[in-house]
Length: 303
Image 1 (cartoon, rainbow, N blue to C red):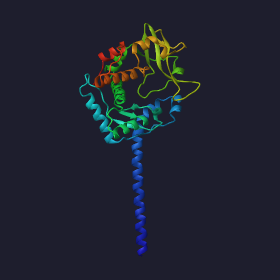
Image 2 (cartoon, rainbow, N blue to C red; image 1 turned 90 degrees about the vertical axis):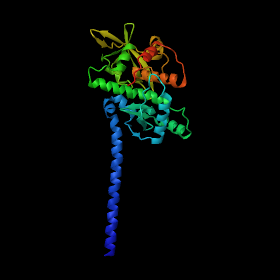
Image 3 (cartoon, rainbow, N blue to C red; image 1 turned 180 degrees about the vertical axis):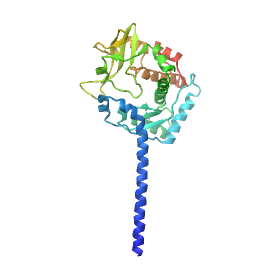
Image 4 (spheres, helix red, strand yellow; image 1 turned 60 degrees about the horizontal axis):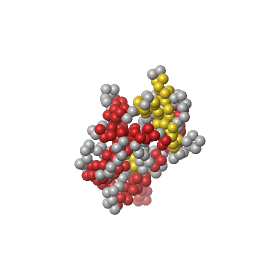
């Protein structure tokens, strides 16, 4: 009888342990599903080429709470006197080393730090080096800010999106392009810019500008920046198979926007300009005074 009680007790312990482990596993899965959910719309919009280069990797992870508080407190302290006030997003996560080609980016309300950038942040935190990735977070915060405003516009047709108003002052036009789907198929889709319909106009000419994969050697890292000539005919924009211009060789465009590393779409140009604004305010840096940056500074939006 004694052995029967012991056996029953042991079986009960095993059952309780299994239940606890199942609940823990479900909790982990729920957390994973919660954060995979932020990529749901983006994944759905990816075309075949972009799905292929991403290899279905969309995992993100929590970051250390003390490290997050440390970096945000540095930014708040640094920018407290900046005018105009700078938009700083506080929702940070860390991406899988293979997520978005190990580039920092945003999704929903989150800044997703690349594995490389997070490792640098962690190292700087350990030695209390405040000269860390603050400028990067300012850049990515701008993308979260942009997304919020475009979402407002999507739900209210009367809402004047300040970003779109600025982009128009830069010469951008928002319209679909006929006979262009085969070109867009090889465009690198950017989580920070929904930009299939953004055309740059200059001196009566029109161009679609973005990053494109190499058709002959498809790779996440084999990308070229091109400006495709677009024509305006009978009230609509049309691509008539004109040869693209390598963006580095597009003098008028580069003179207008200046020396900007991410110069292929207005969302990225704006985010790079916010880094300049941060550098001017916090580190007393000086930058070239090109026309687009002047327009940006006169129309910088914080809300």
